[in-house]
Length: 221
Image (cartoon, rainbow, N blue to C red; front, top):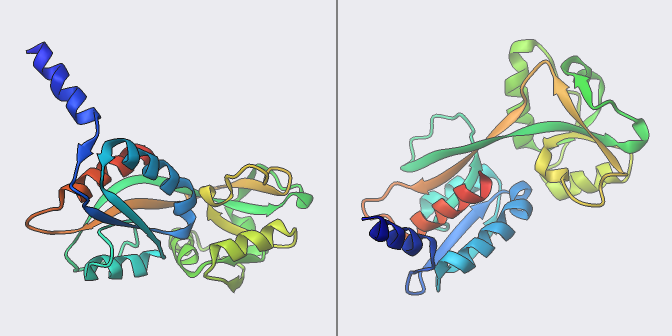
């Protein structure tokens, strides 16, 4: 029995064959940089001959693509909306938001939530809605100078040394940024975005999609 269990364990850990099955993964721009390389490498090791394609978009577009069959699986942010579409969502983990400011301002590692009202911010529409939902019970309002639905543009503007933002921490966790910015935890509230795996609810689920879900969960946890 022990020998058989070991054989099965090795079989599950080794490459699995999917006869050239194509799987399309959708992810937000803030996650692709940190998620896709690891998932790609895992696919190469354990999903032999499956073809992985990756597309980037924000959560609302990813859900539309998923429903229409443009993508097979998506990593999204929980919008807490009553969505009646035939989509299954599996919670993964919570990622904290941090206050990101130019290093020249010498910001403290922890800032009180009430200070956010005094800092002009650049934010995406989606990130603003997530943060404001958490701040509403506290009566704290953000000072959003402009909504820019481009994470890359906001990051570049902050790195130039004039602007600040509230962003998921993964956006600025990159070598070379240490001397240009300060990442500060916001105290007095838990600012997080919940990451989810979303797939269509189908009677005959695709084996390659199921395998990719396992790899994503392993990569993020």
